[in-house]
Image 1 (cartoon, helix red, strand yellow):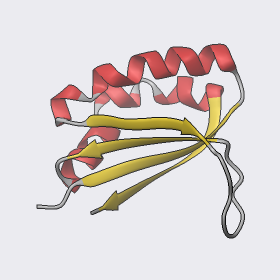
Image 2 (spheres, rainbow, N blue to C red; image 1 turned 45 degrees about the vertical axis):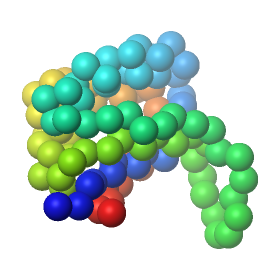
Image 3 (cartoon, rainbow, N blue to C red; image 1 turned 180 degrees about the horizontal axis):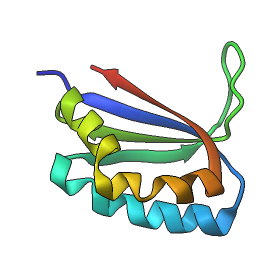
Image 4 (cartoon, rainbow, N blue to C red; image 1 turned 45 degrees about the horizontal axis):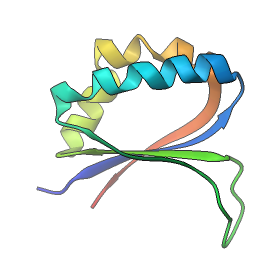
Length: 95
């Protein structure tokens, strides 16, 4: 079974709310055996256009787990805070 990766491309609007959101997301991951792989800042755009400055990558053992996490009550409760804190695009990929 292939791992699944949730990748977030992020532009922070409110640093304090973003810090609060970031502090709460890790607690939503253990039920899905997920791992926060990295959080980082854009160093360069090598081709094309990219509007966001930050990135996050979360690994899940399965695609079903990634979808389960995103639709879980624990994560859904954080979405209003996320939306107030940042503009982002979340994508899901399999490896």
